[in-house]
Length: 219
Ligand SMILES: Nc1ncnc2c1ncn2[C@@H]1O[C@H](COP(=O)(O)OP(=O)(O)O)[C@@H](O)[C@H]1O
Ligand SMILES: [Mg+2]
Image 1 (cartoon, rainbow, N blue to C red):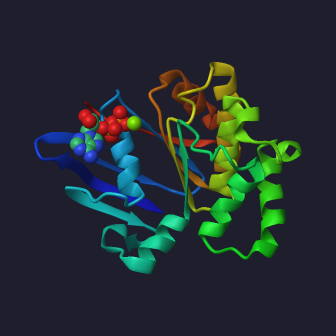
Image 2: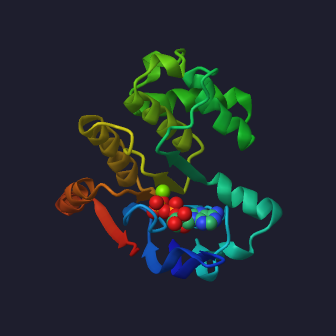
Image 3: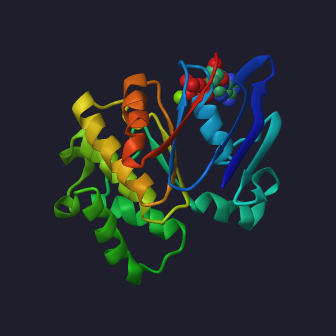
């Protein structure tokens, strides 16, 4: 489904990402690990096609994403859910509105919003709180909102940049369990993290039919 081949990124003399190659399929959890500055965020931005690589090739569902333009590029991006370390929820909007925005962006008719938002908020366990504002929630809950927002468009792939980076270990575990559920429902999740104990825990779950892969970036 996703092929990353010899992809690197430099800015002048700065090497942001050394050449990296991997393949990933639906129903797989791919960890991108490496120290701070090794290029994890850069790799996710390359896959999202926010930036272009200096070398290499990225193919998603048999399409070369580096040559996408205009509406083809927008529709590629719209099929990707993105989750950040700092949640990026809008403080002046309710949880429900925060999730609805994702549907508005991709042009889903508003008549469908209620059911779709209810479904994802239920999945992340926040349906009863849908009319609250972000300031009324904990960090773990805010991350669940951002996961709901990523999921509501029914993405092919989810890119998560240190999604547990601002959370305590117990809350991280809860968020990871949600990600695992999402992977097991057949999505491809690519997660940047420097939390190796979290990676180890998940890669040991292979017995429980969780398909994982680790892409380790060198500095
Ligand atoms: N737009 C940019 N211009 C110059 N250097 C950049 C740019 N983006 C990232 N870098 C550099 O590339 C390296 C990798 O960054 P990043 O991908 O954010 O690493 P990580 O997410 O693993 O911490 C860092 O040294 C960073 O300063
Ligand atoms: Mg980063």
